Amino acid sequence: MSDKSTAETQNTSGHSRRAFWRIGRGRSGGSLGCAGIARRAIALGHPVLVADGDINNPMLSRLYPAKSKHGVERPTSATLETSKIWLADILAQALQCEASVIIDMGGGDRVSEELAEESNLGEFLSQSGLQPTYGYFTGPERDDFEHVHRIWNSGVFKGGQSVLILNAGLVRTHNSAVDPFAWLRKDTRYQKMVAMGVKIIDMPALTCMKHIEGAGLTVFDALDGKPCSDGKPLNLLWAHMAKEWYSKLITALETEGGDKWLP
Image (cartoon, rainbow, N blue to C red; front, side):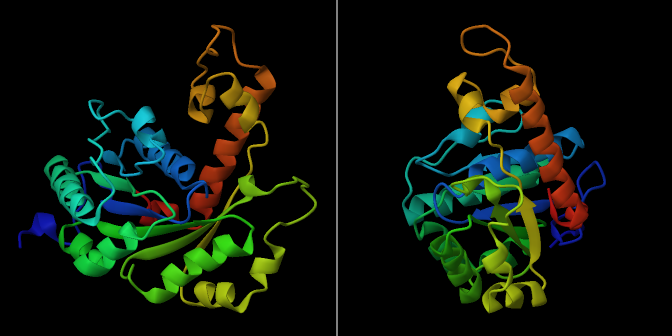
């Protein structure tokens, strides 16, 4: 295998190439988190492809269409065989472009797990020159954490860096004085993950999200200053809150050494 396909491979910006793989239930904030991570990588000038394999939620492909610089084609179905072929094509494209890749296979089904187990995913990615980072997204509900813990504990996603992302945006009632994950931080399973080197990221809540979406925008449209669907400017407070949310997310990622394990 040539030097370009080793785990030490770097892209043209001098940043080591990574494969960020989203894991978690549906509606756990995984697509939103992946989009934030993609925006950071692009802002830093890191070559990155955003691979939207989530058949049920095409959020990433709307932000990064297939024909755009950072987009790729979506899979035609969510079957295991189709997903394998799609993943192989995406990785080949990333290698050709000397780019990192963010992979969102969606949440709530076992295709992602089966794909990882059957292909020995971590070793395959590393040998392809893309060091894996596994992003486990969870809300404060016990079922959310039990889902991602089961997957982590199974060991099918091995090698690389594992990251547990605590999405406060899924809290039903927001009170800044209360930590919705207080129970989790005391859980022995969580503590074992930390002891095993899993990075913990607190993903902040964006409480005005419904207002931004109600205006026909995404949070990233708000960051870019795009007008609402009716042509009017977005409420200045919502725009400010969107910027604060993104800044806090990036700070949380970088505080935990994200420059080493993010695309």
